[in-house]
Amino acid sequence: MAQLPPGIRFITSFSRDQWYRAFIFSLTFLLYASFHLSRKPISIVKGELHKHCAASHEVELDSYKEYAAQIQPLKKPFNASQCGWEPFDKNNYKQLLGALDYSFLCAYAVGMYLSGLIGERLPIRYYLTGGMLASGLFTAMFGLGYFYNIHNLWFYIMAQIANGLVQTTGWPSVVTCIGNWFGKGRRGLIMGIWNSHTSVGNILGSLIAAYWVSTCWGLSFVVPGVIVAVMGIVCFLFLIEHPKDVSCSCTPSSSSKTFLNGTARCRIQMPTLNAKENGKPQQDPEMQHLLTDSENCSVSLNSSTVVSGEGRHGTSAISFLGALRIPGVVEFSLCLLFAKLVSYTFLFWLPLYITSVEHLDAKRAGDLSTLFDVGGIFGGILAGLISDRLEKRASTCGMMLLLAAPTLYLFSTVSKMGLEATVVMLLISGALVNGPYALITTAVSADLGTHKSLKGNARALSTVTAIIDGTGSVGAALGPLLAGLISPSGWNNVFYMLMVADACALLLLLRLIQKELQCDADHTLFKEH
Image (tube, rainbow, N blue to C red):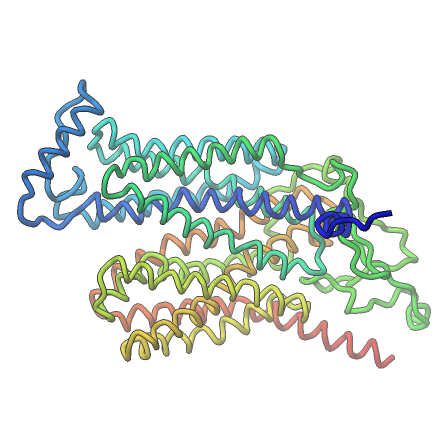
């Protein structure tokens, strides 16, 4: 018998379950990357919506008018302002462009709270498909303002608000799906890698928008809108919500003593001699869930309680207040508010800061600012890896937040010493700022949505994810706003504000960190006995 080709040997070396998991990992990665791809054009096109009024370029303007007349001969005359696109060509353009940002972010923050409640009552595939098709429509709608020569500010604001609302369907859906397919054992590392879709989407969105921004900025929105809509169709055709839908095992096996079923995780432990003496099962802290209350850390074999994934169809959806009562949801939600405040302040203001400090042009400053995202990719993966190894999500976030505050101070000082120092500090700051942000929005959200207090109700994951990310989005809207108000008094004050935000995020996690350390101490005591 002839030897199998290397490629075939590689394919057959993985099981059917592993191929399905790899497919879902890749598909959800691409689906949410397309969401971020459609959010990026507005930051690229801002420079075209308002230009610095300079010497007239009659030839260029005449050709522009001629082109406009060709694409819409029945519309009103083309906007001839040399300062950009009306109404953004006025002196108050900063406020108008800011209104576009805040309208999207505020709508996203408010809509996220409702999205989880709606999403857990609908099939994920249908809900996500509808959201992506609508997002494609409203993204393209903004660009159609160029082709139809629309100069009404409210048209663009309504497009942003509508897009912000429908984009809330994305995050709860993909996190729920990935949480269904991957167990808790290596969830931090897997989701740390998976979360890099945000940076990939941002990079692709920048490249696509920049390609047309100078010639036909409407296409900078229409093309990403079409891509999101196409990915919505792909989602409808291929997304598998749960392993059981294709008769796969619910989660990868992790150990002989741990039994996983769907998103509900049931730890089974043999009773010990001490348990009999106390009249109840002894609990091994090692078998605890990530976030525990003062109740049992595990389920004893004596108590014939087995949590089943069947609950995802047989149980009712969790209420908003019910999700808030899950231990850890409130703390991590408020922590993410401050963590996302810091991250989004860098997202919106970093290029301008680099321009003012390094005296670079806007393009080079924008290119240099992407290093912050590169550091964020490594930070998210590192946070997931450490939290998996230590089995302490809150402690991992706390450690990175503790290091982030002094790092931000160093960044504000060292970045004035030269380009090389700025590059190094961008990478380090990106890792420490985005590491906790990535961990909370992915692995922590999935852990909390499958907490033991839910008794197998896997439908809670969407609501929990929406509450956490929705609260974080409030910080995302506040951060850039506060930076804009504080920056005229000096960039150092902006960094002080960011350091205070990091400190607040750390303080909110202290109770959970204490519980994790206490559980670790209990585990050591258990081993000694």
